[in-house]
Length: 503
Image (cartoon, rainbow, N blue to C red; front, top):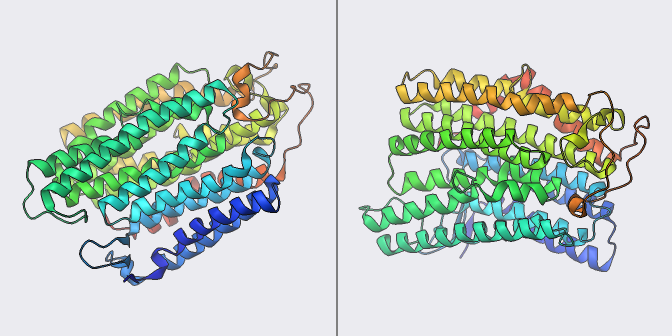
């Protein structure tokens, strides 16, 4: 019989029943995008309120807030502080994305299924980070992944969207199959799928952990399992990209680190692996971003680089047992979620109204779309770690906490972080300046695959400003204010994160 704290599953119930209800509403009552967006946002607000109530539970601190069948072999969902934080970021960004989509998806051919898939994708993430059982973890990971595959290929009338979705399906499917293999190997070694400390780790347990690292590493875009991300981001709706960058690749990383600790990997080994892998993520992400002409692919490689920074500081925390390093990593996740969400949503607004796809297309866009251009530039400057925005505060915490151990490997990593930060200026700042540059972007006939991002209207005269829908303005304003607030006043956010226990 199931029992425990019902608030643990309350946010997931909101999402599960909400996805079904929104689909029925779209099919039977109204298929207007605005109404579906409003309903989806209300469902996400209800889930977020439930999550906030759960966060007040004193049992949460000791990771004792759980719900499920506690008998041997039963399925249990357990709320941990970091899982609650990742879930909160996903739900908060989901609300912004749902409101934004009221206009952004209004001219799309398949938005009636979009909102249900959005809710199922977030549901999969919430279940994954709360699962206390490996097979349950696999099932929720698959739910999140399948929903994302379909959303990436949502605009299936274009060849490039289908190609990106298929590539993501093949690589992501390889990740989930490898994850399932890891579950089977650990079950062979321990006789249970529960995520518990094994009595005596053997070769099968270690092989299972290796499979978990491979499968979840692909989901987290850890190099070399990152190749799906630029293509997926290049052709998925900008709203999907905003949510994916904010939480969908961070969630699997958290699960990977937690399960590795429980199944016997020492913190020192985990820290060493994270630091070494972070070097590849930082370098590959930033160097490849310099070579891009498609803006969303550039932002995709930027996300890979940002994951490198997160992995590096978390690796320092594991290697030296530094709680402050863990907090710096979580702060960076929060700051990146807000900045990258703002970047994708403002970029999507530019394409929706003016058909901009490449860096050249964005030249002088501020004359036609002043507010999205300012929001886009704000996000880029923040990602470039220019003070006093959120990216600077996050990078300051990273550098100040990583320098404390005095480890030669960590010091070499700090040098690489600084070098990569300078390299990132080579694509962030020119792109930010480009939107305010004089002159107009070259007039062009939209390519056949331009519709992969939605509406491609005729470009208006350069002197005419375009009125933007309030559905897009609201999330852009909220995220822009957060980028500034986190940068100017990081202390309240740091204190909030300080209440989150380490892995």
